[in-house]
Length: 254
Image 1 (cartoon, rainbow, N blue to C red):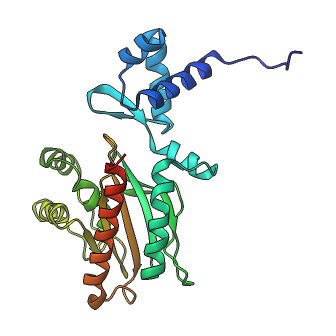
Image 2 (image 1 turned 90 degrees about the horizontal axis):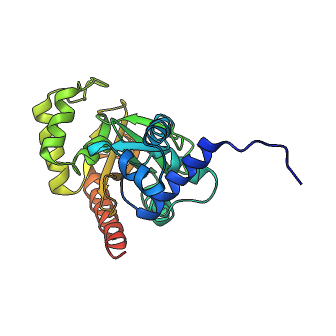
């Protein structure tokens, strides 16, 4: 019995492309996809660029494509969390329980950080955020932790092409000083935000080694200045670095 609908060939091809990327687990170019699936090259070109425009795919070096941030968000929303989220979520809960601060997992998408999971503080005062929310890459502790995972040349290219915004009186707008902050985050394994993005808000961010090519992930935690006083910073920093190391071991052993 016919259901009365007309199948959409372009959608069939789009799903086939996503399936190919999931099986090969590496970024692919238009020619690679066309050859593997025996699809017309112009058709593949239009489909992958449409999916990239929607955030389902993301274009990376060499004109290749990989899964984009929107898939993480959709997977989280549907309850079928990705391996990245399901592995790291218990650590966000542990951070929240120990520090009483909001904890976030984010991945980099171009010049933005995208929240793909979070655990809010138990306090009535919360930092507004939603899963799927995008934050400027060059803002706060998270941005420095993302850049700490890139090469010096990549960091230089990003800073050369973009202006550092003066979000608060504490924001660093000197590119040389900012590069030094990124290098320190790389060396120490943690970045801080002393009211640099939002006045009255402090935070920490740790870069994660997740064994995923072309994907940078970061855990960050934020709170009011009265919650993150100078005396608790060393202890919180040590704890978050320990968490990041444990996560790195989990993914390295895959």
